[in-house]
Image (cartoon, rainbow, N blue to C red; front, top):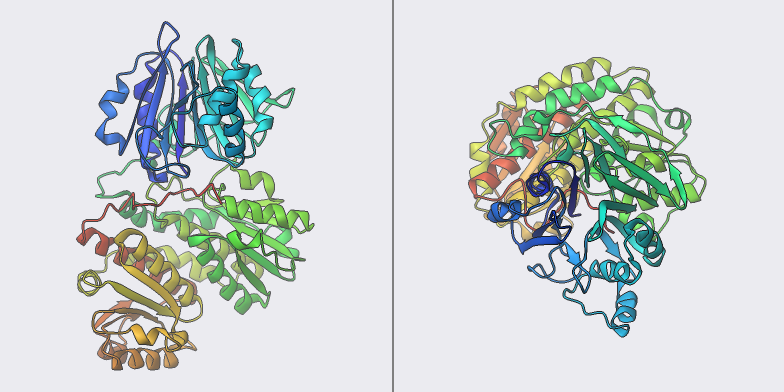
Length: 579
């Protein structure tokens, strides 16, 4: 869930590593550090608790043309300067940065301590440096090959050592990307730190060890040197910059109309596994889970294909009966729980389909088939355009499976979203920003939208928010309604309109202020609501997209009015690569 960056070449390494780490800030972190190898081959290190922006000048002053860096999201040991990476061996000849978790670190540490090693930190990572110290005799690649079989868990590793002029990289169940420049090599947790320097990238696979020198990268799997494809990445540098917007989240919300269109155009056919399936199971986490829920409602209604929805974090340990297609949705392609679920599905001989935003990510190598979103890099921790891109993939699949029933509606959808971006939500923001608790309610696919709206609100505003199917709020949550507990209700035309109006009246009778999102021109609904947000009329898919964007903007504007750190909300990370 943290980030790593490495560089070897002809330029000063530390500034490149620091800038790369800043590109990974969206992943979430509590401390950072950089190590660089001097011209005399000794290794200097700067690390501290806090944000890179607080000390980037000092970190960038390290000398040398080879360096590694890390942003840490604490798992073992509290956030402080000592627990920040890089970590050294006893003699400070070897420096290690690590993403992931070494599950057997306690056992390894006891053995190392018994053999005389002295530890400085409380982290699991430090055992790697000490294990290397025991076997390193000048060939760091050989030492890495010797110690990796002793590690249980997940890791993306970058390691430097005095006496060896190479960076050694290794990967197991944690992402690691190599970038190829002219006379320089880069490594990082994902593509964003590399976009300023190269479009030629290689995605390491589980079990790979890579030897990086300025001129090339050699990759080994076990004792065999292997060839991994170098991909040309068409993401632009501008996509990863804020472009005049106050926050990345706002920029990414405004990018959604063209993201939706680009993704729709890219899904030209339905994968064979989905076309043949008589039923499907979706596994996902967080925002992707909500996209899967929308898909369930749409596919069952339009095509009468049953869909079961499961949380990736539960699937591995409480595996339901699986006989049909299993669809894993993960923006990063590296979500540990979703990857574990797909591996479990394959162990049951089920066909698998991945939906992801990242070419070459782990999920693309696990699944039998892959559909790509076209969202480009998403920097803000709170997912917005990636959610819309997931919906675009899933809606187009429903459209294809229904014989093109929704083609005209999907074609119009980006324009509907553009109209919603112009709405004034200031009155709704005033209703929400003074609350300690907010309920979001809807029915059918709008229940899924309500869940996603509540997630966005709690993520970035820190206001406690819960999503409910509107009919369920009277089974307990009614006890919490009060004049200080607003409700945001989605009430669009359709089969549930009448009962939703009744639900809203029931909540109003308890004295709670109600923000209602409905179709424009609905005077009856506007008269009931304390705040009414009228949307352009459209089909069901358009309405799902429009209400989603309204709730994204409501969360953003509320958080902004409260002065929150919107792009980097506390305690959260973008890519959840640990279980």
